Each structure stands twice: as structure tokens, then as C-alpha cells.
Image (tube, rainbow, N blue to C red):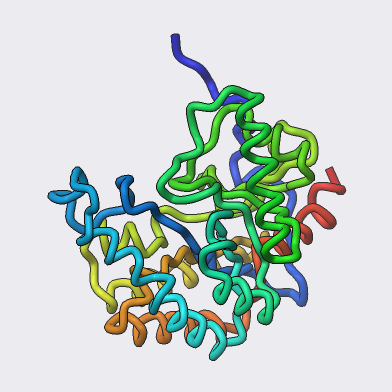
Amino acid sequence: MSTDITLFDYSPIVDRAPIQWPGGKRVAFYVGLNIEHFYVDLPGTAIYPGTTALTPDSLNYGWRDYGPRVGIWRLIDTLDKYGIRASALLNSDVGERYPQIIRAGVDRDWAWLAHGSSNSHMHTGLSPEQERIALRDIVTDIERSTGQRPRGWMGPGLTETFETPRLLAELGLDYILDWTNDDQPYPLNVPGMLSVPYSVELNDIGIFVSKGLTGPDFVRMVVDQLDQLYEDSADSGRVLPLALHPFVTGQAFRRRYLDEALEYVTNHPGVWVTTSDEIAAHYRKTAVTRG
């Protein structure tokens, strides 16, 4: 028996009321910075599948662990250079294990989104009551470590259950990134909840790990994406999310290409450099209330 989606309605982008971003900007840009914890005895994102069944899998774990040890600090320097506040997609387990990263983000006024407990545990297979408890603990832990209660959610591996949006709304969250099917925010069929664009295409894991593309390819993709979204946005604003992982784009040889991409984006006169929190808040205030 097949099931149609009920979380959101079909809404062709050509039939919607126009979106206007602040200051007459046409494209809202944010960096989704994935800040994650992986467990050494569980499989996770792998650069080499041949060792994922081993415990410990030192090859793949070490590659991922480069992120919080080294890569994140290189990315922070690059974001600082362009005055970009990250939208931090935070595993709740990070707060206890990497407090220096939390302090760096708090000092920079990052937006903090809930990103599950870890990236070794996908958010699936839970009963509604189990999930209610799990989400409560995730949100509470993030609020405790960052001093900010998250407003947004992206599941580890973009995972959620059929109940996740409703249970998140109970906890006071008001948008999710998991459904990467649009260039604009849109309301969900859960009162008070929005979907905000995220990308599995303009995402460093897909670009560098899955597809094996190069740094110049990455720059060309960011530039082409912005140019097309700017053209599309003549009558209604668009969103350009850029998804980064410290163990991928934080590698030394990729620094220059992230720098080139961000230089182009942040110097574009039609771009609002912002966070996913601010995109959701502005859309809610100016678009949703107009009906």
C-alpha cells in the first residue's frame, strides 16, 4: 500500500505570491555548517566503504574526526573573513565533547539548529512517545550547551519520522530543513511549521565525496547556482543554501575554493547574507501572514 505525502501540499513556484527579502535583495544566502559527533564503534559517513564493517574503523573515523579537531577552525576563519554567521546544524552530543566549538559559535552569534543526537544515530524507528522523549532531550541539551533554544531542525542524514514535525512544534521549533524540494520557504500542514530550503546538491559531501568533483567544480557550481537563482528571482525571492562539513571542505587543499565561492556570493549586490533562522522569521512575518 503506497502512501502520499500529507506533510505539505503541491505548490508550483510560478503560482505563489511574491517573496521580498530585506533591503530589496533577491537571493537569501546561508551556510548550513554541519557540526557532528560520530561514535567509533558505529558506521558513519565513509570515504572508503571497504573498512566500514571494522571496529574500530580507524580509516573512516579518523577522516571524520579531522572535522572537529582541525577542519572546523579553518572554516571558521573563512566564514569570519566574509562576515558570515553560520547556521550551525548541531548534534546535541557535540556540546559535551567539543565545548571549544560551542564557545566559538556563541562568540559569533551563530544560529543553532537541532541536528539529532549524533550522526551515528539516524532519527528513525521510534514510536511517537520514544521520539517525543528523544527530541525533548536533544533540544534541551542544545539549549543548555549553547544558551539558545533551537528554532530549526535537520535530522542526521536528513532523517525524520512521520511524527517529527508535529513533535518539534510541540517543543517550540518552527521550521525544518529535511525536505530539500524547493528554492523558497513554504508552510507545512503542521500548524506553525515551515520548510526552509537546504541542499543535497550544493552540499560538499555530494560534490566531493559522492561525485568526486574538484575544487574548481565547486566554485563553478556555487557561481552558477547564484546566477540562475538571481535570474529566477526577478519577481520573487529565492534561497541559496550552502551545506558544509568540516571534515570535507575543512581540508587544507579546499580552503582556497571555498574562499573563492564565498567572495563571489558575499560581494554580489543582490544577495542577503543571513541565517536560516532569519530566513524563516522574515518569511513568516511577510509572506505567511499575507495568506
